[in-house]
Image: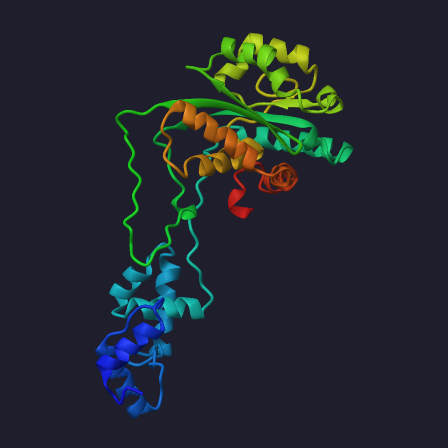
Length: 339
């Protein structure tokens, strides 16, 4: 139509397709040359690429021996020591079904912690044999601190763009504030939040149990509250005499904690859905945007709680039964790396 007039071709293209990106004269000239030389309109995407060269099979034992000698060696270090390319080392490892597993971080255990964990798991297993939904009738509760400079889970954050926007998050470690938060889980419900001002001590916590917790449980059916167990960890505020006395009155023979009818094992965040589930889940949601004020943080916590489905909460609670069995199978030691 334009008789190999590339300037005219570019102009006609722009007129016919005004919503598309304009093409230059050189683009049409390259197109004409490609059609003439190859007979193809689309360019060959593989042209100029270097095909992967096969790895010499006699080098594989050297790489596998290096990994067996030191499983923590990086593929880059093995490549340097063996004089091979890093891609060849990685290919050998993959061909031999090897995978770079990451280290798991776990709460350190002391003394007879393992025995206490075993005792708790055996008690809980017995309760589950009597009532398979026992954990749904237990009020799991805990406190956590939300910080203005809280760490963002960058694995869950993405910024889609044609070019790198150099997305950053500023934080101020010199001036920051905190929001101390109480939450609970019973069945499929998240109870709370309740926000404490200042340091949490035994008196403050006892007042919370007497004057505020009943109001937070107002939406929980009476038949659940009437038979509900209470569970908290062994934090200093939880162990005060007044707190234990209040719990004995409100939940006679039905509470778990340090100094209670049933002892909760120390250093065991992997056995309460507050630690292995709720706090991490809430902080992932709250810290997506940088908090501006304590009031803003509190509202974000409320919004995050409201956004979590009842089904998700119930799955976390029900997962405790399998955690018990893993803990028992591992003699009360850490087990989440096996989960």
